[in-house]
Length: 372
Image 1 (tube, rainbow, N blue to C red):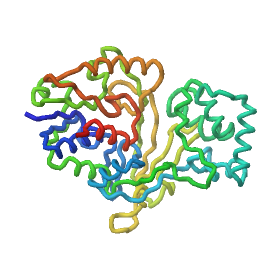
Image 2 (cartoon, one colour; image 1 turned 135 degrees about the horizontal axis):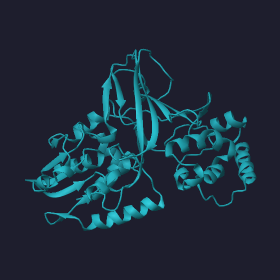
Image 3 (cartoon, rainbow, N blue to C red; image 1 turned 30 degrees about the vertical axis):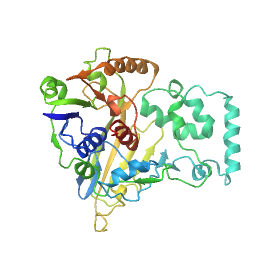
Image 4 (cartoon, helix red, strand yellow; image 1 turned 120 degrees about the vertical axis):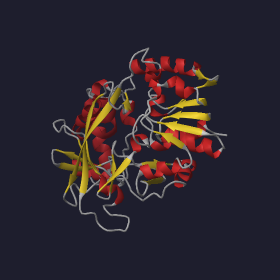
């Protein structure tokens, strides 16, 4: 018998497992995949830590979370400063004075703010009601048309006018020459990759992979006093109320026999005609060097293609519209009443709570749920 059965070896489940084990609880972690670490999984190719499920850059202002992850990994000083490529024109992201200077030739913050205000007034926007109007209010029509519209519509598969305004509100806009995407006190990537970090989090904990909990639920529930479930909440209930919608991502990854493909970890392709949303060059997350500091002779790139999620594919981003919000609320009502062996089932993480989480947020949520 185990005190806890944890379904899912991603960051939420693994954080719970570590904290429970530290409190003397006996824990079993299972996962349907053939590896630990969920979507932060990294694997080594030619000395390069490849982010199989897309780029993951750790950033947080939460000292408690930062101290926790520091127990299991040394973090490098990587700073996320992506580039936008619009038909060969290159712009700095997030939107900052370098972007405004490249777009309009302005030099001072006052000039940049005046240009945005002029374009906002020209568009006649007072109360932004959708993503397009919100974007123009934030950065003007020119930047919206070149750097937001095509990329966002590829990413979400919907016209910007049909997307809610809140999606764009978290996008940084700065009237300084600061191109650090994340305005966080602590930022970096685990030296040696996320898989190594998660493996250390799981030391002393039993883990079983290639196990589908939902196919053999009764057998596993009989082994533990309480269940923590981090899979899709709608799948847990057999999609009885319908399928929650997600956006998915497909990756085309190549090993190239050259030392440098694009000179940056992330380049976003913001025109509508380019089929991929961005290209990741994984070696630059660790500065293109091996642990001894030697330059790596090859490189690995991944093109990312956004698509509508279908059952059987990997779900990535919840579609937080009214229809899905209502459906999730109904599933949560069921979840709040769910028990196993007389104990409430804990639903957590990106899929269990049907919400977008940054890595530090999912760890913080698990820490709060497991607070003793």
